[in-house]
Length: 237
Image (cartoon, rainbow, N blue to C red):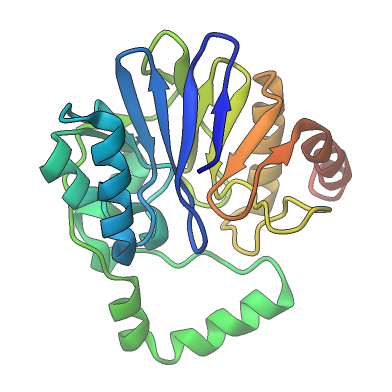
């Protein structure tokens, strides 16, 4: 299991990987889960959390956005660990009513064509994207402090209400604001508003973070993000 540790001894563990990443942040006695993975990863998530929490509740569950591969186990986590769910206000309706979930736009020809084909079988697509509805506990629109070392910032672009967790101003857990699939690029295959997403990259760089943990793939370095930001901010001013 991958692990990262910050200067102030915050520990970050990768709980799921593959189709979707989820992470557990331990800041002293405060535990923060970031995203939940897809619904069928429930068993893996629970086994790992049971070991880490050792009978304690999960303090917070941060949902970086409302897409099915990030919120699939939210309802079960809330029930099992009495956790408080934090999500951006504009994303809340989609976890309370999964059938209202919006599909993000493709950012390249392949993803645009693929989505067009999937939309022709929307009934099957909706079944694939389904997850259990859940009520959020904390809604935020702006920066939001969770603990002495952890805070949330809005990072829209992939979706209107996407947000990222900043840990100790060293590590940013960014959901789908960027991808970690290709060593040369952080550009995600889906985003509702690319120019706004690029500006969110600038906000993430302004935190001073050196490492960026995405919802898909492996960690991105500050050097790679700076290179990508400088490239795309010219294209999308």
